[in-house]
Length: 517
Image: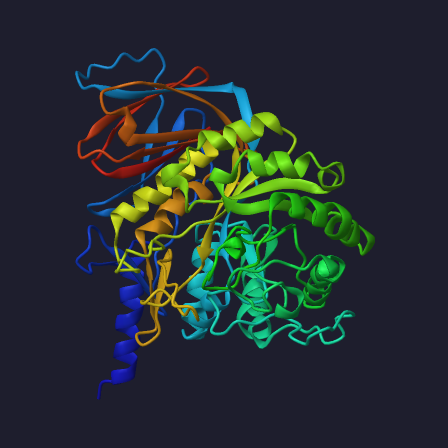
């Protein structure tokens, strides 16, 4: 008699083997498809490995049919193209170098942890590996909220006890213990490199604020500046007890939100002037005094249309300037604020780094469909923005929630959005959105400490539909990323004085990451 369980196990095993590291596609009627992962299988991000001189490793994703497809080519020396096609010609010059890269990552929000926890242990592992292991896209950064955000199931802080000036009632929330710390620890164990964690606060306890609420128009009362600085230190102390230490901290998530009447989720209003005062006289000295002087303080953490004015105001304060190491920017106002504002800010403050610290799709209030499974347009929005930010001195790019449910939540204020990974708890599976692959084309192949190098682009008739950037990696290899948003196939020609010429065809609506020795 045939053992039915054994047959099922064999079929599952064969299925897993046959899929290997290839995307299992599923369409939900959008412009492209998602890749399905579950306890049985999940696609992987291909690693480069050793390349001999002249060898080229190309990773391609396309709207039509490909995710992380690999090809191997070679550079030619003294090569003259016979093609009559108009080529997008890129000239790589590694002698001209720009900023060093801090990395790429996403946020360990309550919502992300809640969704990951709904999966089986094996599927949870696959999801975290997809982000933080060498089988995945090798994130090296994690953002951690200090307390609750809108992507929690309730508004809360760590000390909701009025007038507790000594913070004697301060304690981490159940959300930290169940939905943040375990997954941070898991990611750290899966990663082959250290993960840079940075923290961000959304609101002080209501009793410290002018409006006595965690949301709405309200600012920190000046008499609580020092108590709030002590609150940061208590957070670092409590996380340290769980073997979690931080690389950086932002002074406030989106400080302009709390200056808006009736703002509908966790926020706290700050002007640049008050931020400078608090940072220079309270936060910076208090962190240094308690052993956290090496934790990098990033100012602003808001939309880039505030630049360079915000940075100028904060850094012209001599006390604040002692402690502020970086400037954090979000992407939500990018449609009406040029990326050149980042370059302008860098030119004014070349000794401070810039980092893109939050982005998501579906955030516009008029967008009725918050999660769009398989949207290639959102892929292109991500890929284009990453290239623009990197080309304008950003040292990295950090996505918002690591995972959300099919509605784009949970979110206590109903502020639902999309995510690179969407979890279907009922089926014990998760879906890698096209946005996941947009992130991976950069994060996997531009490792930390890579340096952006000069890339001259020969202008062609539809140049505006292409985004390109290039890097010298710490292992000596070079990475070039090319996003093709046109509806036409295009010949790509890369010239490198140290290697020769490389030519390949770029399908319509595609992206290529080119790595070579």
